[in-house]
Image (spheres, one colour):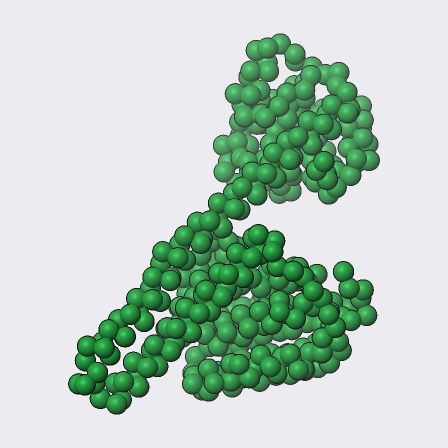
Length: 368
């Protein structure tokens, strides 16, 4: 049975007695209950509070419940929120009118509290299943997009360079051969990271990633990751540094933590110009250990910031050295940090740089 705990419901009824009965019963059932007594206020509350479901009376002062439902459904921002009518109007024509207006169900007064809760539970379940299906479809589309575009582009560059070397190696100068070798290495490395992230993401979607928390010390694991990217930083003349203000043990799955930090450091280097800086710092924050990757890079535009950590949106930014990415790495960051009971926050300004902070539980917190 679906857990309604924390689900938000808006109850709209001009009858104070009905409103009180429904509020008390639904509140005891674990729902977060919002109430109002007219349709105009209901429309405003839906826009600002975005409840999971609306329980709407028909005969209201001013605008009727039917008209309010039509207005709600005409706005794509909240058209998907289910509306259940609850009314003393019990004729078939009234019920048909309710469904035509966009309602998903119709309860007649006098009502049984248990029936109301059962209807709410059914439609919250349906809505959550719809959201999950939309998320799965977005994931599928994202995979197809990556496979069709990014992998093809990466392999295309590799095949072109290899074919040129195969056909014309005798005429190529050492300088040009070195340049082709560098391009091949960069393309192969990009493709490898892309495949690595794709495989990790696939395992996450199938829930086949085992979570094995352990006590870790920040300095050794951070320095290990920094060593991996030292050469990449030198090639772009970027000052890559660490600032460890807190060296307390923290709790995390080592593999997931490493994947998070690799993606953050790699992104920071990718979007920082030559001569810039990338710093990885460790500090205490509200009983957690906070790991911040701060760069002096290009920053993130407001429109792209809204797409961060969303599987249904793609960011098409290109690195300062022409590096390509899919945004899949940040999705992995979000999922892994969440799995390790942490959080992610972003501060960014276009042209100035970006700071991304991930938190993990300090070792004194119990492992789960």
